[in-house]
Image (cartoon, rainbow, N blue to C red; front, side, top):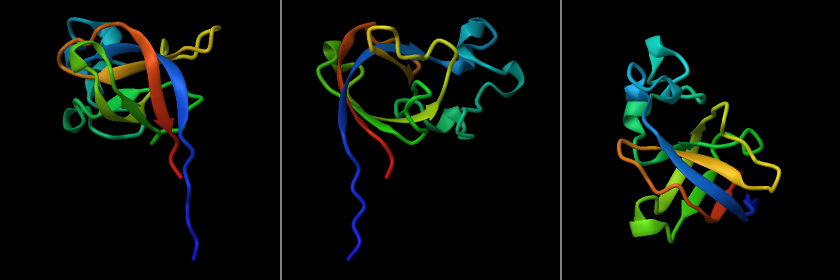
Amino acid sequence: MTEIISLALVITAKLSWYDPSLCDTAPVNCFDPDRWWQMAAGHDARDWYGAALACPAEFPIGTRFVISGSRWALADGEWLCLDRGGAIVIDGRGVSTLDLLRRKPVWAETLSVIAIPPP
């Protein structure tokens, strides 16, 4: 029997949020105004609100992030990395920015998050 095992990592993450449908009024939210819904993985953002995020390039597309303990549970849940962004990086202190695809803001907070790379 062959078994695929994924390792989980606990990372420190700074949370933010974005809504690419605001491209015309808040350009920082989108890469291409003509195709604002297109995420880096090729998925349509309109189908992924509340479930996808942009993560640093050091994490493969398809990495799952499990967030718990966020303020008022606004960011709690499992999120799938399907996007990137110029400001979505791991900073000099090792803190990863995770930019959640949402229509409403989350608290900009830093907390421990579980990262599960794809098998």
